[in-house]
Length: 543
Image 1 (cartoon, helix red, strand yellow):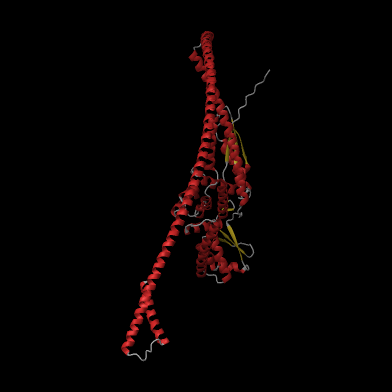
Image 2: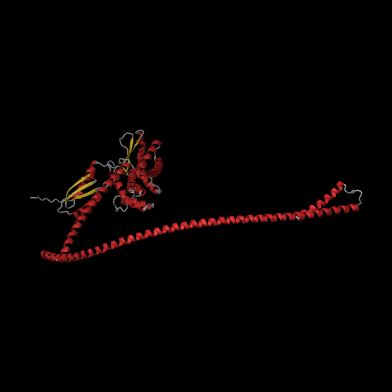
């Protein structure tokens, strides 16, 4: 403010100078420069003086105004504070009144609750007192009853002692002896009842098992059946004309001798028109000879060197056919990871028959049957199919290796690192070893089904009748046998024994002995069921 007023004073001085100059109060031009400067200074001083007086006046006026404003603000603040104080006092009084009312109401409710609880407790005490009185009355009655019961118990004990003494005197047995006798009777009755229950349960279980087995076997048979090929030991090769027979024989028979020597097959050239017969019990050799002969006939050049060349080509072609047949079979059945050599042996089964049944088709059928039954029973389907496919693998080289095909097949499986469970199934499929796994039993059953089902195998009527006669003759050779009946096309023999010579234990032993002798003496497809029947009749008449 001081700076602002000083500037104002200077402005007022300049204003005075301008007025003097403008109004020509003094003729400035006529003045001397010194007087002119003095006049300017005087005007400035005058302006400063007036400005100072004006500033002082304005400051005092502002101070008075500020004092009045502050007084007015203080008075208003005091009035406002008094009003707020009165309002606060009123609000506090109202809140105190409200709290006092709530406290009175809460106290009133608590007094009512206390009074209610006191009344309830009083009622409970009265009820308890009544119950205690009732219990005391009951205790008194019970005590009287216990005394009466004690007296009756003592009386009963006396009566029981008297009766026991009397019973011992009448029966001539002591109490311990009578107890032992009764327990023995009860034990015998319990054992008899238990035996009856066990027999009934065993009979029921066998019926259910037989029923379930028939269902599983029927399902398996319905789902698969293999082709049947008639057993043959000869092959017929057609010729374009009878002149070809002479060319096959050759000069002094050298062509036919060369062919027979290289293939191991007998060539029969007879009066059959336009045909040559190849005879051999080895189907693979017979097939090689047939392929070679057909190639020679198609080529037309028949001489020893050409025959040797064609036989060699036929052998290679036969190896290719065998390998492809084995691979196709494994793919068809769904068995994987077979050793390449096992696949070759599997393909050789295509040219092997047993009782007119093609062994490869039989193996495929057994694989399907075993896999189907394993699926029905929840067993290992892959293992059952694999073992079923390989169970007769030994028959592929049984013409070349000595021994039963079961042992040969097991040795081949071990040699090419097959699963030990598969080896066990191969060894057990004809009962040479006892089956130890479900899959082994299934392969055994599938083999029997495939071999014994109607139309699966063929044999001559004469051989069939001789086998049945031999079967009955073996059974009748044992002591105690009365009658024998070969039934079910020779798959079952029923033996009636003399009950006074053969008891139940000996009957069981007799069935096993007959079965062993049949296995050692006969060749037959599938299996033969031996049934020994011992019948005892007791006749009595009620008069």
